[in-house]
Length: 76
Image (cartoon, rainbow, N blue to C red; front, side):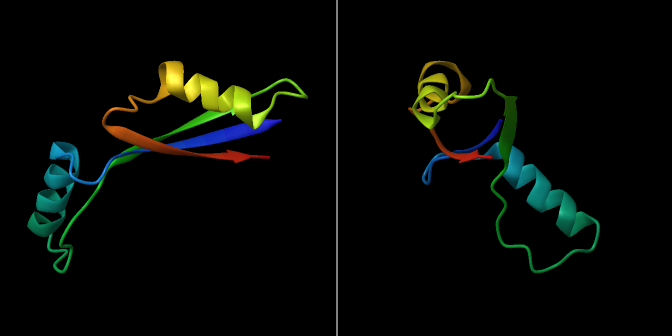
């Protein structure tokens, strides 16, 4: 069983990495990019029977800084 956790900065939180990417794209000639938000994906290999609630607890305790980040979970 796998879980994929997508973590992004919450709206309103400055994203200096995203801004650096936006600027670099412009420098490389890619016009029309008005904003970039950079995030991360964590893929977990889980034992059978592991619940989404358990993955949520992992996110709340370690994987995401819930003060400034939001996350979504995909189970497969």
